Image 1: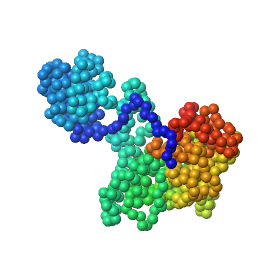
Image 2: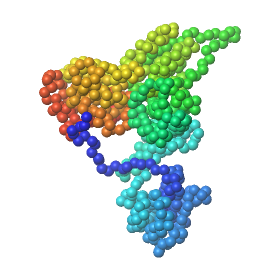
Image 3: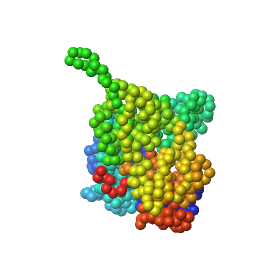
Image 4: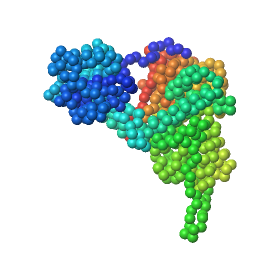
Length: 608
């Protein structure tokens, strides 16, 4: 389904290509000996680079002298390198050229730092000569405060600590304003760092260990001579890349005859899903036992042991009465959309919370630290087993006299296995109290500016799922002009769903027209919400073009998707034969694009 319009994004000039480099066995040459040179040296050392300082020996700061004594950097003075006029800054270019000539291919970057104000400020002419000398050797250069002589620039960078070990983690963030405001870049960086929990560094370290363990386990299964090792690891890299872009892409259910390749794919899927859904603090505190259990089948660790005995003043053992189970809806994700009943259950009543993986950290962070939290590990191929495990955990905890909150995303009755859990708990002696939640089927389109019902556009609403029990396909409803179709849990199978709607397949009714509007809403109500609006014929290409997906996501199919755009269009049902629809779509999306992408929430939500 190729788009006939030029819908790929046009490049907007003025940005930087932001890359990260590992400089092991490479050299960074820093010109200047001041505090900025010391800062650049530290950054290069942390990137495993060799560091050479070129500066006048009587103008080298204490930090660089200390690093020289420690053997971390090599310092050359102007007199140490050959040049025709080594005692004058105009000879520095010749000296640097001589160094590069005698060390071919080892220097990756040259940083000229002594062009700031001061008594020894390097002139623009001298900086230009150094720049051209380096370019003759194909070495990239950065000259401070002279952007015309910069092949690259430094971002305002922060590196997180691992709170468990106190050491630096591998996680870094860098901000650049492309020369438009260095001071502002520093402030933006601080705001980003402050907005993220301190555990993110430790979370990355634990996830890295989990990935390594997953790869080690796949090497173990290679002892079965079923596949060439080179082919196996090539496939594994493809699997990992696909998991990063689409962690919810379906896989088959587990079986006893699982091949090594299937096992490897499943492991990487589980790693991707843990990375996507677990709260940072839980990732940061992952133990080796947790990792082993994840890779062995996604089973949850045993709940925290609870002392169920009470002591009276006469030393008689009293047993706690049976507890209770609350089946609670958490809404679409934004904490302000929790009902008062849900908020009370989480903050005042719960002894243990058994949460679905899609419930965001912003909601889980409201739960007191004294309350045990367990996340359902419904990883691909293991959803049924994980569901049973969570229900068993709820019953076990309730029998110990605890108040169990079974926390579901959205509303428990909208594709939340509400019925199965109620009947299971009832069969085990507990009648759960069900607390409704705001369903994403209604809230997400509202956040996206789409009225699922609207006079003149949509007279009815139908909600369905894109995937049936155990991953089976479902029969989708046929097209009706005045109906909005909301499809939950179907974006991972987007191409298949679109084919079913437009062509022959498991559909009950008329096919959908190719030009019909569709919106895909990702991470509804969260700060990184994204809405992709297009037509049925172009939506697959649109999703491929934007790259990484942001689960959870849902589809809204129908004319309601364009009803409130711009000046609005409330005349859809006046044209029952479809006359004028192509013009309607053109007015909505424009004549040269096949889709539109909107990021973030509307102004005002930051106050809630």
